[in-house]
Length: 131
Image 1 (tube, helix red, strand yellow):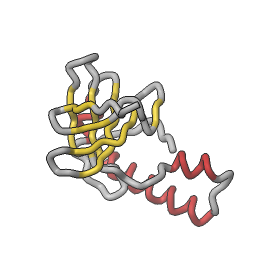
Image 2 (spheres, helix red, strand yellow; image 1 turned 90 degrees about the horizontal axis):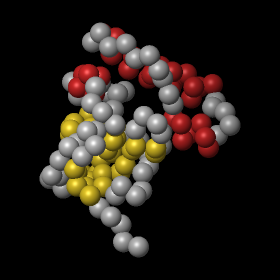
Image 3 (cartoon, one colour; image 1 turned 90 degrees about the vertical axis):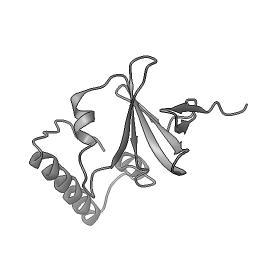
Image 4 (cartoon, one colour; image 1 turned 45 degrees about the vertical axis):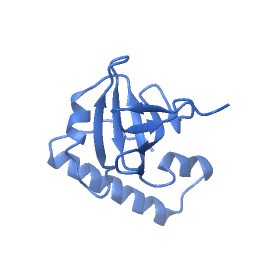
């Protein structure tokens, strides 16, 4: 069966049948920007909210860069387009390993805290942290 490619915002191509991750909050897909010819990640959310708009203005090395926000006409959702990030999320690492070495856990905690500090300086309080 051939992949069913769709385009959002006139430029971001993705296959809705092959999500990278899905949960009750969002669906995440590998995407391709037909304009810049780069691989990206697209997060489809059921609705727009103020936090999404604020995240577009956050530029920090430990926070995933938001490249574009596309309001979807169909269903009223939002596509949050981000850089690709790393090959594996922290959740993937934890799923594949039963534990982390203490040194690795300290580095991860340091990066998370530095990112939270940046958000707090912009008066954004993030109430839930997930790997």
